[in-house]
Structures are given as C-alpha cells and as structure tokens.
Length: 403
Image (cartoon, rainbow, N blue to C red; front, side, top):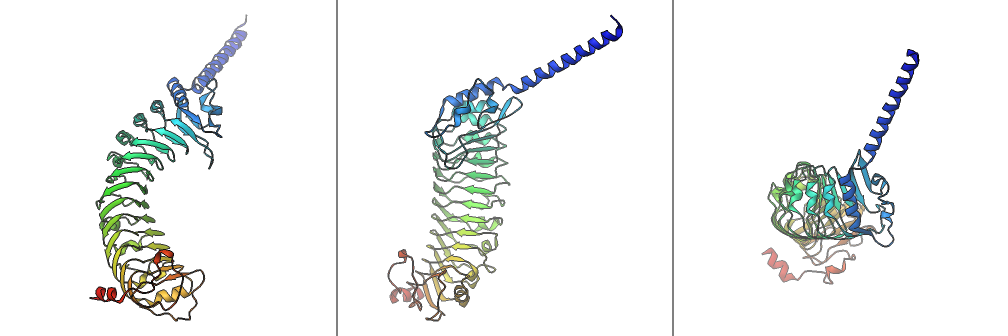
C-alpha cells in the first residue's frame, strides 16, 4: 500500500475517533446527574396533580427529565424547578414537598403554583447554596419557617404568602445580604419583626399575621419601596423609621397599634397610596409641601389640630374619626367643586365650619361627608353607612373639646 493511501486511511480514522468522542461527550452532557435524577423521582412520588391538572403527564422517567414540564437544566444539573401549571386559575398540586429537593445542588429557582401542598417547608432547602428564588404561595404549608434558610446567602426573593405558617420570622432571614423581596403575608406568624439588613430590599409584605412589638428606627433599609404591615398588632412610634425610608411608593401600616406622630416629610416621598388608618397616631399633621399622593387614609386615629390646606390636592382623602378642629380650608371646597377631589371624608371630628354655598352642586364623581362635627353640615351629601345617622356632634362634647 502506498504511503499516500496510508495517510488517507489514517486521516479518516482520526476523523472517526474525533466524531465518536464528540458524540460521547454530547451524550454524557445530555444525561442528567444521577443524584438529580433520583431527587426528581422522590419529588414526583410525594406529589400528585389535583383534579383537572395534568402537569405531571410529561414526567416519564424513561426519557430525559430535562424535557419534563417545569424542569430546566444546564449541562447535567437541574437549575430551575417550577412545579405546577403556571397558567392563572389552573388547578395545582397536592401532597408534600420531599426533602430530596435539597439534593438538587445547582438549583437557583424553586416555585410551586397555588394548590393543596401540606406539611412543612423542608429543612434541606438550606443546602441549595445557589438558590435565588423561592416561592411557595397559596398552599397549605404549616409549621415554622426553618431558621436554616438564613444560610441561603444568594436568595433574592422569598415568597411563602397565603399559607398556614406559624412561629416567628427567624432573625437569620433578615441577615441574607441579597434579599430584595420578602412576601410572608396571610399566614399565622407571630413575634417581633426582625431587622432586615439587605440594602437591596425593595418589598416587604407581612400583612395579615399576628406580629407584635415595635419597629426600631434602623430595622428597615432605605431601599424599601413597598411596605405592608397591616392587620397585625404592632405598636410604638414609627416616625423616625419612616423619615429614613424616602424611596417608599406604597405604605400600608393600617390596623395596628402604632402611636406617636406622623412625620410631615413622608408626604414628600414618591408614595401613590398611604394607608395609616386604625392606629393610635396622635398630634397634628403638617406636610411640608402640597401633597400629591393619590390616596391618603389617616382615619380612625387620634390626630388633632387644624387640617392643613396642603392636603387639598389629594384625590382620595380620609381624615374621618379623628380630633381635628377649626375650619375646613377653602382650597378643599375649590378642588371638590372642580372634581379634582373624589373622596373627602371629614366626619366624626370637631370641625366648626366649611365655606361652601348651600346651593353648590358637588360633582357626581365626588363624595363629601361632614356629619358629626361641631357644625350643622351646610350641604346634604350621602355619607357611608358606618358614619351613623347623627348630623351634628352634641354641644357638650364640642365645648368639652374646646375647653
């Protein structure tokens, strides 16, 4: 055989071996890590589709699990696991979360759609050092939030809302440096709210729980934009805390026992909705500038003094059931008649007058309630049923408040 033919044959053989090795490498990469494979099997055994759901129909372990619904892989590892049909209104899953989830060592995202998952959150989740997103909301999780979740130093979003979790928020959660969203509303959590140290935290939603105690002035970072603590039993002053949070755009502290003053500076923040009703706030309220917040609800507190004309640019203003005195500023009347004020609730205070023509026609799009003050309402307007039937506060009460 000539040298030329030998060279051609050797070249073809080399090409074949290179192609074979590349194919082997391809198949090796495509085969899921055995530990991840077994973990997915355990997770599947602990869960079932609710009636009407067929999420698990693609989970046939004779094929590549990286093609399963909700499973996302990189190389031979599972990096995201989204359990359940994500379409709104789709029936979810039933069963429990198997501790084998903690074996998916490269997992960065784990979520479960609303359903009927029961039991506790597995302690093994703390082994997922790359986990950035953890969301299991609107299920029936019970027990306490594992303190070991504080070991997830890369976690950015924690959403365990609308479950039946009990106990306190572990202080270790507040030390996670990357946290940006904490959503634990509608549970049965109790104890105090721990300090959150993450300078990236933008959303904190703890409403509808049973938290008690006060909030330290430095307990929340200035990065907070959305703050909801309503329907708890929190108490104490929050003026120093609120003064620091100048990035706020939504605030709901309603239905608590907060006390002390409301800082005038808060009305200059980029807030669109401010809900401070049904607390024990007291003293006068003096915004430093004209207020451009869409909705301000300060009702059912112990606020006093005269109503600031700076509030006349608020679209929906609830100042009812307080201890405000004096005349209603004329700018309120002007903006009410111009329909730029839609709701102006001033009932159940100690106001002594408002300069409005009794024949003035209040726009149909606007609501004004003045009853149960220290004056006869000059205009008859429909009030909410809870305002009662009495038009004027008894004279004895008005004289007592003056004295």
